[in-house]
Figure 1 (spheres, helix red, strand yellow):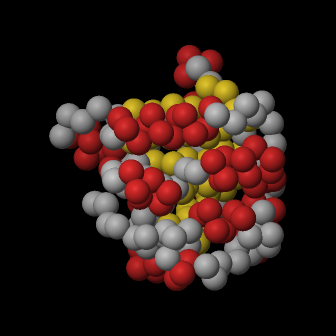
Figure 2 (cartoon, rainbow, N blue to C red):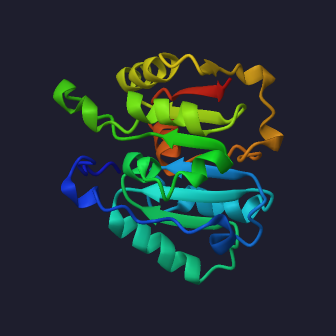
Figure 3 (tube, one colour):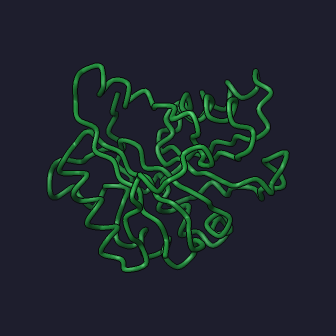
Length: 209
């Protein structure tokens, strides 16, 4: 279920500083995947428990959902998962958090809030400033995944990413899912909802060149 939270609100100007990988993961040398808009963390809990060869970080703008995810963490022995609260744009632009980008192997934007009104497009998570930052900070070969059931949003994200010449589309037939952050192709709750309701899911992969 989508809940509107204005990411440009002053509430998100103060960034939650994410600790070093050594502090939050048992094995900080594992490949790092970041999921933007991780909600209550169900998707990442499944990934982290089934794939111990990766570290997972979820960033969510709805504080209550992050608190719920962290409470679940206390009851589970998962050493390759961490959750953070805040606006991902602000977090990544914070100098104390940019170390994450250089360690990143892949990142997902799964069914982000579409913000349908044109005057609200600036609230969408994928913005030129974010893509430009990623292009400068992430290493070559890092993968960006996008998924949505809103065609207009998909076109917007696709255009914004490809407008930066440091990114190109990655043909799925050449992508080895077995070595990715999601070898079992686990689906998010929103994707399951879209499939159940026969909504078309638009998706694309991009790589830093």
